[in-house]
Image (cartoon, rainbow, N blue to C red; front, side, top):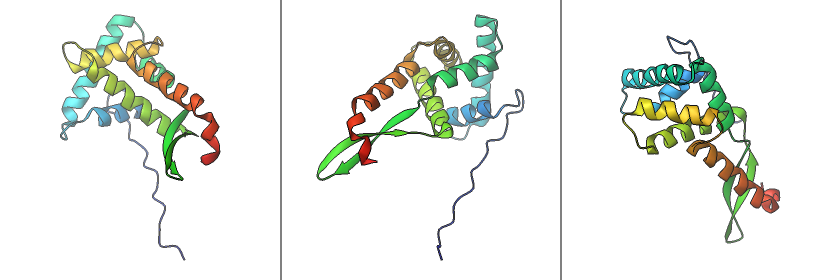
Length: 155
C-alpha cells in the first residue's frame, strides 16, 4: 500500500471587488513580506489606470494579457549520460497561467517608472496588445523549445 497521498488541488478564492480568481492569483504573486493589503492596493490602482488609458473593462484586459502570455511548451533541463539537454515539454493550463502571471510581474518590476501600479498597468496593456517584455519571454521560450525539438524523446 502506498504511503504517499496525492495532495488536493487548491482552488484560489475570488477577490472581494472583482470577484475573480485570476485577480486573487495576481495579488498573491505581487505579495511581499505578507502585506496583502498593499498588494491589493497596487493591483486596484493598476486596474483603475488601465480603465482610464484603454477605456475598456480592466478585467477583460487582464484576461487577454494573461491569455496571450501563457506558454504552451517549456524546456526542462534533463541530465542524460553526462550531458545536459533542454527537453521541450507541454505544460498544463494551470501551470501555464502561473508562469504567465510570474512573467508579467517580473517584466513590470523591471520597467522603469514611478510606482508598481503604473508599471503593472502598462505591462498588462502591452501584453494585451501583443508586445512587451512578458510576450518576448514567451516567444523566447517557444523558440528554445522549437530549437530543442530533437530531444523531445528524452521526456
